[in-house]
Length: 287
Image 1 (spheres, one colour):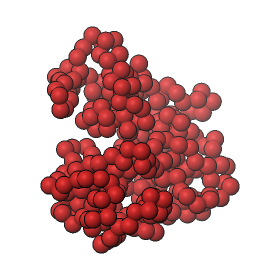
Image 2 (spheres, helix red, strand yellow):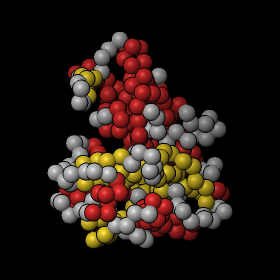
Image 3 (spheres, rainbow, N blue to C red):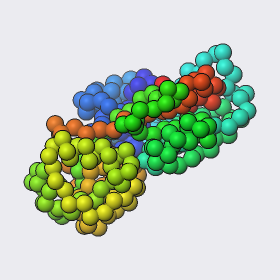
Image 4 (cartoon, rainbow, N blue to C red):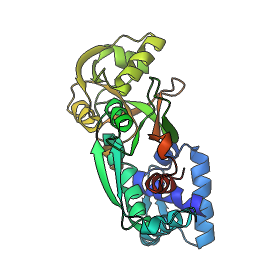
């Protein structure tokens, strides 16, 4: 039932079975099956379904906050008995990239407040490379970021949380013919080349032999979406962030066989692996 509740919450937050499937790394049919199992077990219909969309019905709206509360309580039950995290009084400094701050982090922090009410948390924003540097020198205790392409120091451990696919976005009224044609014929808005996302996209272009006309570089996902919405060009971005929480202001084109994904990971120092604050963070992230 916990698995089905997690899937239900993901569908509610992303307003789509397909988006939820990509977010939690399942097939759309698996998501549909889990929602049906949940509805059968509850004896309730949770969504109003139409040919084009799904929306929460009144029963689903009532169930959603209860489901979130159950999942938060379940996280507290998973805590190992040899660590009394509930009475732990200390600080947890979490480094986070922007899309995580508006994605999985708020629910994780909510669960931590139930798990360790005396623990204080501090969020340190930054790019992936900056967060790994801060982690190495002890300025933060953990980071939720992107698995880097570069080799990490031996003392840094990463655990995979989820994978997020990249998508091509274009202005609403622009015609779309193919991935290659759209990228090569329109101005391209690039993730900052110094970022891990920018480097990954560049590598993808080289592998696919795609030539783009880069007109600007930006290191903020939602800012890139806004630029595309304004008609300045097209972009490749991860399917993550605030912009997918409502009706997207741009066209979204999935890459299909030309798969390009990023891996969201929890990183921490190996020597801290048994520290109560790290155990608490791993518990609420399901690691």
